[in-house]
Image (tube, rainbow, N blue to C red; front, side, top):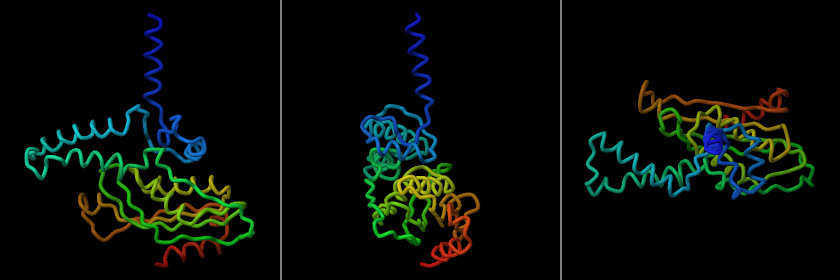
Amino acid sequence: MTKTTKKKSIKKSSSKKTVGASAASTEIPVSVRQILENVRPTPMIENGLTNEEKIEKISEKFSDIMETLGLDLSDDSLRETPRRVAKMYVNEVFGGLDAKKFPKMTVIDNKMNYDQMIVVQSITCLSFCEHHFLPIHGHATVAYIPNKKVIGLSKINRVVQYFSRRPQVQERLTKQIADCLQYILETEHVAVHINASHYCVIMRGIEDTGSTTSTADLRGHFKTRLETRDEFLQHCRTK
């Protein structure tokens, strides 16, 4: 009787765990776990499902949704749609929920003693609104002032892409990108700006096709030095 109670207690505690991206898995490199532990988390639970199991379950549930909408799943155009959607969710548009897909980070020592702003502009940012599961489409501008390390430029794009590939709110996405780069680069001087269109605004509700949303996270000199802040914001306005 005592053993049964203990097992139930452990299972209940585990199911409520909130993690950055399944970060407890032993298959995930220690370096990746450490990075994700230093990034504010997306609300998640560890459900123990493999990717194939997730695809099967989502496919079944999406079939129910389509049938509830009155769609004919025997039609040759619709028959494979539930599985296509499931594979897209797990392997592509929500790939950022899988810590094993976190991109390899390449940094080098700042032997050149570079101490000026490094800016990557117009990074394509494709995500999904977690409130309505509709697309978010925009561009990010990311900058940092090196301390001891310099990162490969494409890695900044990959960090933006990884955290975008989750159900998101734009405010959290902006913070997650900044958290990640601040930890990897070991510098407090990081800035992230995102300007995006939200299809939950475009396709439903107010149905405003022209508006965009801007968010920014300015840290270190980008926040405290007016000239550094102005220089970065000028890059955000430049296409």
